[in-house]
Image (cartoon, rainbow, N blue to C red; front, side, top):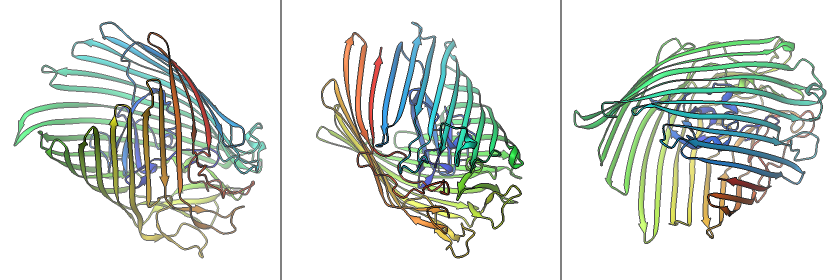
Length: 605
């Protein structure tokens, strides 16, 4: 879902959106509550090796502040001597708006594999996109530059030092009059991020590499200049500083036999510090938030070819919560054969009552600013999650298939909810208050299937059926005539995806992808689109994309890839945007972009 002028992408795990997920970088929790809103979109794809998604309340190893799941972004390591430069040009809709994205990366490794470095960079410029020609953007203007490197040094045969650093400068601007200063526009939402992030990890293997000790430190420092205002308001400029520092150690110890079978013991200690300072001088807004988290975890996994039993727990002492939070985790795996795998898991998690990313995004509704505040005595939100799954592999002749069926249930207590207060704040802003609601239950069924017909053709897809409901109807509007809602907003009861990859010839490849989203409830606040607050049931969306890539082999180990494609082929896109300066800037849903034409070229060595 693209937030009206600034724009961010949400993910969904086990029926819960991205606000309930924890984002990690190389298993390190360096994304703060503020930077998590843009965290995924600000990371260049050319620096990512893979993305690991862990469902449920959290992992004892990676933290408990994930209620729905954990997204772990693993960056690329230097593995061989290589280089690649690529450029992609995207035409957005029929308006002539363009998205230019250039990426560069190179990897150098010594002959003895004792040291290596991977360097990556990105430069991107995207025009603002106005879908309904009212002079106000539906997709923000974007300018991004990223430069970073990841390097390793094997200090001995049994030790390794890894260092990583990257800097991202990103500017986003939406609304009208994009070529003018923000305070000259009728609506402007503008953020200018400057992010420095770094990590250092030292790995040591002992006892003939049976024991593994890892010590790490990571940080992310964000400086943000912002403007959230309307009607040429000169007082809506703000600035935010946000720093995260995390450090810890982890020990992994295999045991030949512990009680009843071989096992692996993992223990660790972590410390995390976050300081956030948010200021809007013209509105007398000045917030300082300091968070300290001391954590320890212990996990043991018994495993053999047929059985696996995992038991672990994490203890977090959060400075904004009076008592330590204990988060247990358990998992059972049963493999009756090589082709069948059953799992059952139980986990818990929590979200602390600190200010979150959306609390520092000031929406514009009906031409006035709407800010979010925390209710007095706000308690942490907690979860308990249970999942059962069956994973089946079977070969039909030359076709290898995989079927995953998973049921999930999450019970949320003291769930965070929003309600609009009757009175404005001292600066005249409308106020949304974050409070503890009655709780909620999220349950559903997830089915995924894969088929590998040959080395040249494969398909996979999945569908999720879910039910997300508050335990008691929650009043979300200050209008007493607006009904309270028991269904959670922006949570469709059905959604799914598919991908297909076909190597047509040795040089020509095609990929077809798609995502489908069923109807959902979305809040539509009074403005130019409606006279009263409404809970709108959206239409369904199906976003399909097709891409062809042809490879020219110029010289030995030198390849030129040329690609072309169409995304959102059927132009499945929201058609009821609010118009003009009195619009509800948060009334955005569905696919982020309309139909787009894409062209790309890539040179690799």
